[in-house]
Each structure stands twice: as structure tokens, then as C-alpha cells.
Image 1 (spheres, rainbow, N blue to C red):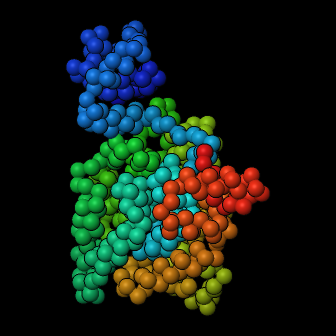
Image 2: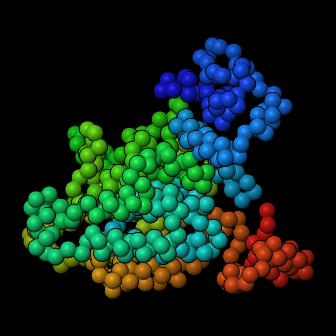
Length: 445
């Protein structure tokens, strides 16, 4: 199966899916070994025979087999893109790193879910995350965790990981070159994602989107990004970035969040990983590259890039060339390496306004990555909510791009009443006939 010619042949002829779905005694005798070299003839199965086999297959067996079918196609690099009247291309969500400032991102994502009436994992085909953005990507895309629960998880994570005394943090820094112990972080990842769940296993669930987490390979002559994918790329469409899908899901998050001085590096085999934010804290460019490899020729319908806040670029320090110190130099290098706005400027120039959307509020002064005080964390959430209230028009354009429908204030009333959705769709149609009285409601496709 590692031979590309076999993989390509199996996908093009639908053999692997058929073999897995109709495994064992359910197969007719002449289909016992359908995987043959490309030079061998292939026996075709008639529709009548296929129907007979499906009728014989117990429902419980189908439920067990179909997840394996999805996983098999993912291993082979076969990825279908859902296309409909309201879905015309690839939809990408990119999530920046930023420690506990991810609470700002959660506030933005909540508004997108509210406006569209759909979950994040339902809205996007590919989700890319770096560092804390990788946590969001995996917990939303793999766990399907509600955003309210994810917000509470971040509060728990902050208290368990970052709430240490100065004596303890100093001792840990001397012993491990990191302020915090990664054990509690790893425990949370294992509890939520499973200790033995590999990335490729996550695609057994038909609702799971394609996603990846970004880390930095540091034991190279030149550090480079590493993509922890939950998919294999199609044959002949290699990525410019090294990566893999055979890793444990929790290890992917551990590598992506290994911020220097905060957590120790993490080693998998011969590779040593640290936080992906060292190179690509904003993974949107990586996501576009991967999407073009996954769905070659498909148009980019929507790219939503969500940050965790940025420093005000207009604020200047009272320094001169003669008194710049080592701390000033270190701050400049770190800010340059972890900056997120260069990709934003690029996409803003290259992509249409109704295709690319970036959300990244300006932070009020210094905001810590490792904050754990509830009062300060509540302020992060408040900052995100204020930013959302100031970006209503832009968020509405995102909603329209993702759903093909318009949104207005009347939609906020719909969840409050226990009426079936079709009633509101009927009202919409009736409203169109009498002059658009209910033009704010969704049209039923």
C-alpha cells in the first residue's frame, strides 16, 4: 500500500473502499482479492449484486465498517469537497497562537457560530492551528466541543498549568530550561483526545474536517515548520512542508504548544519540536498551500483568520540608538519571529474582500500569554466581546460568505421559540411574495 502506483490505482477504481466495506464473508467468491497490480483485469460488480450484498450486511456491521472506509480513503489521500448551492469552494479557518489570549479568539468564534447557526466543524473544510490555536482546532474539529465548554477548559488549563509560585518556577527553569511543568498539560490533552488516538483515526468520524497543527523542528541546521496532519495528501501532490498523520493527537498538541522558556521541547523519534509560533504563528499561508494540495483546482471560497490580539504598532518606546539594551533586542527578535500581520498584509492585497477575513484586535498594553488570574482572564473575554461588537458589519459578511444567506437582528429571536425551522422558511417565501417582509430569515435550499 506504500507504493504510490497501487494507491493511485486503488483510489481511481474504488477498490479499497469496496474491499473494506464488503470485507469477509459478505464478498462473493470472485471478489475475495480485488486489489491487483495495475496490469491485472478488474472484475466489475453489477448494481444488482451490490444491492444484494448491502441488503445482507447487518446494520451494526455497517456502523463498524464505514469509519474504517473513511480512514482508508484518508490514508490513500482521497478527500471529497462538499459542493452545493451555498458551498462553491474550499473554506479555511486559521487560528493564531497566543497562550491564554485564546479566550479572545473564542469570543469571535462564538459570534460566527451564532450568526451562521452552525458549528465551527460544520462550516470549514480545513482548520489550521498554531500553539494555542492548535488546541482550539483539535478541540473544536475533533472533539466537537461546544465553545462555552472550551472556554471553561481554558480557565481550567490556565489554573492547572500556570498557577505556580515564583520559587517553583525558578527551580523548574534551572532544571528544565522552562518555567512550567508540561505534565499537567499533557494530562489534559490525553484525557480529552485519548492517549492512543492517532491523527488519522480522527477522520473515521464523517463530521471531522481536515486539520493540522504547526510545530517547529529545531534539531535541523535551519529550523522549519512541521505539520501534524489528520490526513494524507493525494498521490503526486506533495507539500512544501514536512509533516505526518501517524502521530498521536495529544502529542501533536504537545509539540505545537512547546513555547521556549514556557515548556520543554518535545521529542518524537529523531525529531525535536517546539512551538510552531517560532516560524508561523499565523498559519493561514500554510493552510492555503495545504488546501491547494488537498483539493487541486477547487476555488478558495473563504479564508477566515482569527488572531489572539496584537500590540499597537503606533506606540513607540523612549529609546535611542545608544541606550538600546539586550532586553530591547530580544523583544525585537521575538516580536519579529512571532508576528502575525505580515501574512495578513499579503492576503489583503491578493485576495478579494469577500473571500479573506482577518480578526485580530489591538491589545491594551501588555497582555500575558501565561495569565491565570480569573479577573485578568475575564478581561480577555470582555476584550473579545467588545471587539465583536465593533466588527458587526465584517462578521455579517463572514456569515453571508459561509452560508450564502443574510443575517439580521430578527434571527436572534428564532432560538427562543420552539417552532420548527420550516415555519420560518415558509414565512420567508411568503414574505418574498408580499414584498420581502421577512427577508432576514434563511432561505431553505
